[in-house]
Length: 245
Image (cartoon, rainbow, N blue to C red):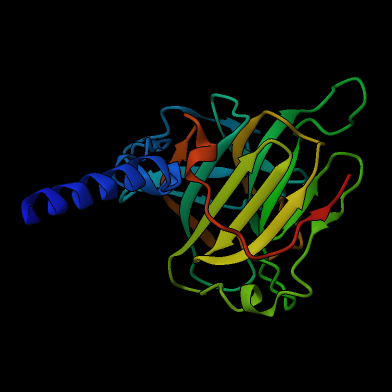
């Protein structure tokens, strides 16, 4: 009789585990990550603009600015992505390097724009200014040049960035909801319909003739993505949503 009771309990536990545990947790060991960067070269990526410097070294994509560049340069994925979860590690060795990761970015309209190199999209900022809004979202070009989601009321996220050490972005872009974590700290929970599908890009800022910082570097590694049913692998987000056009 005890054996029967034990078997019933086991069957009930298996039933609960299979049907009631959310898919993102039930399939924790089978998450369909795909590497976007092979650690050896820029295969699967392309340069947008011809003056920024990007190369692969020691399993990292290393980007730095170049003097006398009036426009930004980008290292972008060859493919476009709509709904996905993206993770990447990044490191800045010295203060003063402002950069970002663009998602869903699209090519500009050459009949409207005067710049030769321009992409529109959500830029997840790596912000080296005193305000420390790394993990916030900026509308890169797009006719607005504005913060869509800043970290002015998120002190915990503002303190999450570590200069000179590896940091990690987790970016969930599913439907019109963009969520960002910086080193596992919730940073952004944006609702926006402006960009729905586009490239993933690493931004290299312009550097005018009087600028300093040509020797400052930003490093990226472990760039990976989930595109197969990413909604199954969403993380709980404690921040309230904010809506931006």
